[in-house]
Image 1 (cartoon, rainbow, N blue to C red):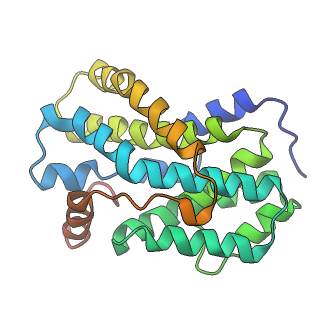
Image 2: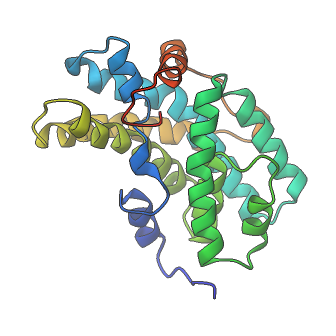
Length: 229
């Protein structure tokens, strides 16, 4: 039975809730690989900001483009094009797989809530399974969120994943990651606005963090890990 979303604001809070059953607890948004690669605890706020301005911009833009696709009742071919463009902008195979794992969890949730929605059905049928921004774009569209809310949800989730993982990886006061998130708020708003300004699938930025890519590959080769990525 499909669920009718009465409030986009409630939907945005739902997506921001780390208890949402999508598998996000198994990911650190690159923090564990970064720490293993030599990142200092004092540099974590800069790491969060750097991710938002590179990886975050790409994923938020793809989320917005997918949300527009779902709202406009686009076809499967258009969704596959968005998927190809996003895959091309994610050079690291471990990062692609991590995004697919998260996307699979979110798509499964969407299929439970809105099984008959055409966008959900095309998402579930996507060859190779959807990456996180595609699933997030469909989820935000059906739940009534606008472009800015969708981009903000994507970016906040990335930053919050880093902050939450820090509690397991670093000897930090639990209040410190909260401070990191609040300090990242202006960056989230700036990057969200840039994502909304993207007009089409081929305009999705191709920014990346070379160290993030390198660390992900090194992390994937390790046998002892707390997080998948």
